[in-house]
Structure formats: C-alpha cells, structure tokens
Amino acid sequence: MKKMKVGIIGCGKISGIYMENCHRFDILELFAVADLDQGRAEEQAKTFNVPNVYTVDEILADPQIELIINLTIPGVHADVCLRALEAGKHVYVEKPLAVTREQGQAVLDLAQQKGLLVGCAPETFFGSGIQTSLKLIEDGVIGNPVAATAFMMIRGHEHWHPDPEFYYAAGGGPMFDMGPYYLTALVQLLGPIAAISGMTSKAMDQRTITSEKKRGQTISVDIPTHVAGLLRFKQGAVGTLITSFDIFGGSTLPPIEVYGTHGTLQVPDPNTFGGPVRFRLVGEQNWTEVPLLPGYQENTRGIGVADMAYAIRNGRPHRASGELAYHVLEAMWAFHDSSDQQTFYQMQSTCQRPAALPGNLPLYTLDV
Image 1 (cartoon, rainbow, N blue to C red):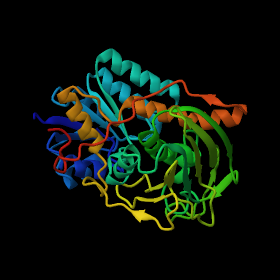
Image 2: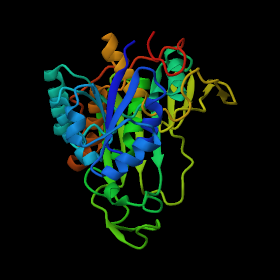
Image 3: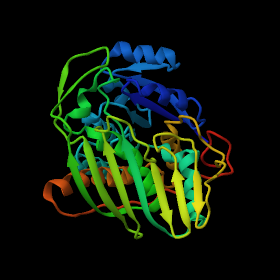
Image 4: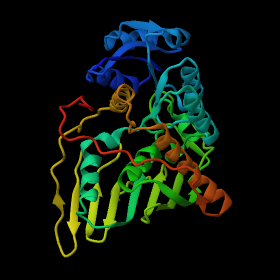
C-alpha cells in the first residue's frame, strides 16, 4: 500500500511520541516538521530522524504532504486545522478538536466542503485495555449495560508542570484537559450521548505554582476546577462523570466501571493503552482479570493518524473521527452549560461508535 507523507505542526513535548510512532507504521512517512520556534523543530527533527524542517507556510505549501498532524496549543487548534484544510490536506489534531463548538463545527464544515478527512485524539481507545473491555461488553459478559461511572480525581498541575497557567484559563480545566479521554472511552463502550446534566465549582480563586520553573508565582483560576454530572446514553444507560483538579488528598475511585444486568466491568485508565481489565458477575465474590487482546499496550499515540491514512487509502471510515471529537467537545461544554443554566442539556450532535480493531493483523498494521 502506498505510503502517506505526513507533516507535523507543533514540536512541543507531546510531539516526540507521535514522531516515534509515525516511524513504526508502514503506511506513514514522516516527511517534515514545523514550529514557530525553528530551533525546537530542528532539535526534534534531528532526534527523530525527520528529513525536512519547514516553516508553517512551507509545510502547508508542499504538495507532497497529504496529511498534517496538528500538535499546536489548544487555543489555535481550529485555526491550524482550517489552514491545513484550505491547503487541501487532511488533518489530525491533538485533543480537543477546538476550544469552542463553533470552531469545531467550522472545521468539520470546511473538511466536508473540501472532501477531506479530520481526525482527532485521543486514540487511547485503540489500546488493548479499552478494546478488551469493548469485546466483553459486545459479547454480553456483563449483560445489558445499564450504568457507568468515570472519575478523574487529581490535585491539579501547578505542582509539577513548568507552565501550568493555561490549565486555569478559558478553555482549560479538568474537563477540557482530561475529559476527552474519559468521554471518548465511554462513547466507544456505550455509544453516543443523548443528554447531560452538570454542576461545576472551583476550590480557590488563585493557585500557587510549586514546580521549579515558576515556583511561588500565583495563577488566577478563571474556570471551574471541579466538574460533575450525569450522562444519558442513547442506548439507555446512565453514566456519572467527575473530573477534578480539587482532590488534594488523593482518591481511590476507579477510572471507569460499567454496570450490567449480569455483572460489573472494571475498565482501565483511559489515558493509557493497557490494562488491567476485570469483571465480577452476579453471585461471585472475586474479580476475574481478563487477558488483554493482542494489540497495543504501550503508548501508541499516532495510531489514530495511521488508521486515518489507511481509511483514506481504502475508502473506509476512520475511528478517531472529527465527528466523534466534535460529539465529545459538545459534551464537555454541556456539563458547563447545564451547570450555568441549571437545566438539562440535550445533545445536538451524534457520531458512529468506532469499529473495534481487527484482531488478526500484525502490530503496526491496521488494514489488510
């Protein structure tokens, strides 16, 4: 199958794992990188053996590049996606798809007009942990799913991140930072969301940075730092989701559990690719740990790009789609809107539940 030349815009911390994994998939040829900081682009290109370092204008103008991987900061995700689409290139973007629903819809609309594809992280649901959980649900091991819980409970990033300010600015917060992982996993397991009810709060108006680079500086907290709510899935199950930066003493709550008419399924951290996966059926006293399906258990960020490249070549739907990412973006805003307006939010978008990964292919190959 013909390789697809790809270019990366944005050479920050997350870019390394994408560059490393692009080299592992035969369908991808990482051809060029670009960043506003030319030195950073050159350093990453040297480290990961990328042949070309371009400016942003140059990478968009090169006709050899078919697909752009957009790893810029969230505030410019939509702008860079729109520029790539205008240049006639497919685009895959780090989460979230955009900061606002209006921006996200504009990206999808332009892609449709141009006959191009949009893909978006997270792609952790490609991992063996979520894929094994999906198979257990589809095989009816826990019966008909009736409910789910999901918890992301941490103290916030100012104690470790060198530049944590954006986590507490507009478009930040625990829901927009980590919500995509949990919501995407829930949609993979239970299908699209019909309605959401949310409540939000924040523990303090300012935070003090304790990481070394800016130790002692204070941050204004402009967004909710505790977001809790309920989700009704179209198939009928009811979910509970909490994402929080206000858990200062730690938590023992599980990342995700799905409750069915025959038992309970424990799903692994959706920010990882591996396990463990466990279930316990009615009348049983102990949990059964399930061997993971063959597949991806290590950090394989970039697999969504490869899946999209195969989809373009073979004319099939891609799994980490723009429609899925927009559905998740709308859901994240729904928690905040519901809280602000003290009402239920009825979802306007929907998406296809991503197809399970084929189980009979060698690693780093997604289509025959």
